Amino acid sequence: MSGHGTIIPMTSNPCGPLTGEAHVPGDKSISHRSLILGAMAVGETNISGLLEGEDVLDTAKAMRAFGADVIEHGNGEWTVHGVGVGGFAEPDNVIDCGNSGTGVRLIMGAMATSGVTATFTGDASLNKRPMARVTDPIALFGATSVGRSGGRLPMTIVGASAPVSVNYEVPMPSAQVKSAVLLAGLNAPGQTVVIEKEATRDHTERMLKGFGAEISVEETNQGRVITLNGQPELKPQTIVVPRDPSSAAFPVCAAIITPGSDVLVPNIGLNPTRAGLFTTLREMGADLTYENEREEGGEPVADLRAKFSPDLKGIDVDPARAASMIDEYPVLSVVAAFASGNTVMKGVKELRVKESDRIDAMATGLRLNGVKVDEGDDWWVVHGLGHGNIPGGATCESHLDHRIAMSFMVLGMAANNPVSVDNGNPIATSFPIFEPLMSALGANVVRTDT
Ligand code: S3P
Image 1 (cartoon, helix red, strand yellow):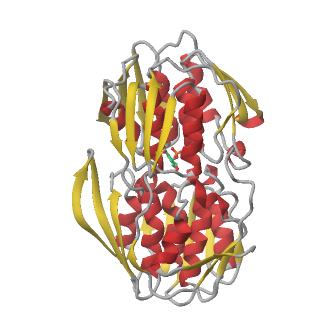
Image 2: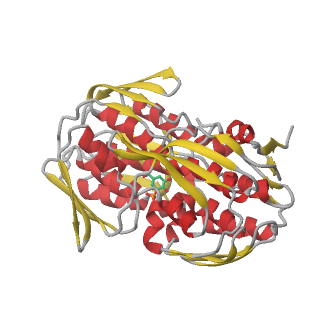
Image 3: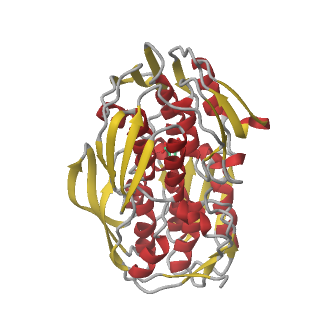
């Protein structure tokens, strides 16, 4: 069980300059995949820098339930003794994935061709989210599923005992769906082909290659065509998880809007399928530089330096960049409030089916704090007021969504009055050290219920 039961109201008070170094936790996407692929390899995978947030810990528990030996050594060091492709055992209880769409969707894919049956559930946020996007393609492999109306959790999946390979075009830009299909394809004989029209984060493809799977990626006019040869023996790996650009986004954006700030955020993974926010911030006129650019474990990495940027301007964010910054729109909308002019964000329908409806959650909270926002089904516009002109002063609902809670905390740092959230508890899913890290930089974020 994850700890979402406790309600933790939080307030962020306007603060002075943010300065110093922000060592953010490991990448959430890569952490989930390390545990799952480690569990599907034969032998011992060693992981360092694993994000020990609730989402990832729920995935670790799930891998144990499917029979892998998952050992925590402390300080982000973990060992996984895998059971091999097709080696999952039947869990003897319900798999609770907490708040994590990535966890549940990737695990559903991984078990879909293993011949075992498992029942999945999550918290109130996860149990509202659409799962048909995964159950549709895994049905093509031969898996069956029964869930609540609208394809929601709790849901039971009966893995295919005689899986067939699949050729599947992912209908929405979703790395989770792409990854679920690839993980299911691991235990199907023959070649599984996945086509995505827009490139989404490619950690699964990179990691499968690292674990020794035969996988190729071809850019065609149809999109990215990924071909995976089924039933490989995955070889255990040593994985160093890079730090999460999606978590780095919070201290970076906070520094950009808070007068006098100068923050260094070291060792951030800058995989092009993840780094769209930083390009966008620079287009808006943010003083954001990459220092010490290098390659680590096949991924581009740099130290980010973010400084207060008084002359931000609103821009039309390139919709082609949406997938590479999909988790960063909430905090971008906060920065947009401090820019002069409008920031237009289009092609972002997927934001409506994240941990919350992120357009609605941010638009409502920004309006309560004095910022005008317009929205449509797949677009929104923040009317920037310019630096020093954001009233603040309101309490916003986080809707069990970590990124909504953290975004409003960032808003409070540079607004004219404190900004509160009804529940900051979900922050622990992805960024358990958010409060001490931001406080060490000079933020004034407090829990307000005690
Ligand atoms: C993720 C993919 C994205 C992202 C999520 C993590 C992943 O979701 O929003 O936080 O690790 O594959 P979608 O693939 O549904 O867009």
